[in-house]
Image (cartoon, rainbow, N blue to C red; front, side, top):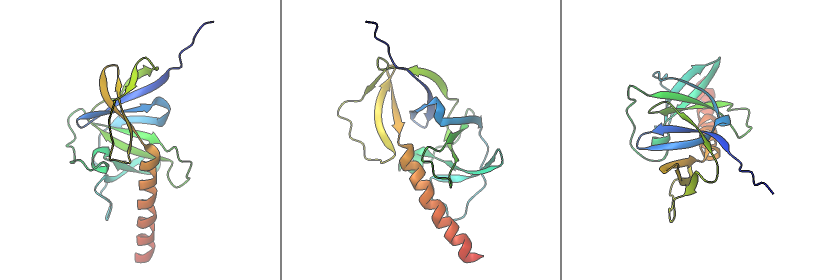
Amino acid sequence: MIETKTAVRSQVIPIEGDNLILPNTAIAEVIFYAEPEFMDDAPAWILGRLSWRDHSIALVSFELACGQTKPVPGPRAKIVVLNAISGNAEINFFALATQGLPQLILIDESKIAPIPNETETSQLILSRVIVNGEPAIIPNLDALESMLLTYKKIWMKRSKATA
């Protein structure tokens, strides 16, 4: 019997001091970094709003959302536009600020392993892993989308109250 390995086309996304691993299907597009439009009363982890393909989307700092310090966008900074996975029609896309260009990688079980005895305190991190010998984070996109939805509902109530 021939054993087949299941491999997932993924992207290694550089953030400040770490890398995120996302399946390729989660990524809608990678664009050049541009300063977002400021959003009043947004939590610090929402850097602002971008106009992308006739959509107004939130630009998120994963680092700030996890309680770390705000990274300074370097000369290689990019924005990764993500497809929302929750199925909620209020958020179809959102974006992450990165420190460089994501790299395509084919991951199978021989290339990824959990970091043993790792206890995570952030709800936004599903797991810390080793991929091809390098540490990386598998983010909890459901939790991040939930945070965005909560903020959007608050923002919409404030907008209606001031109208």
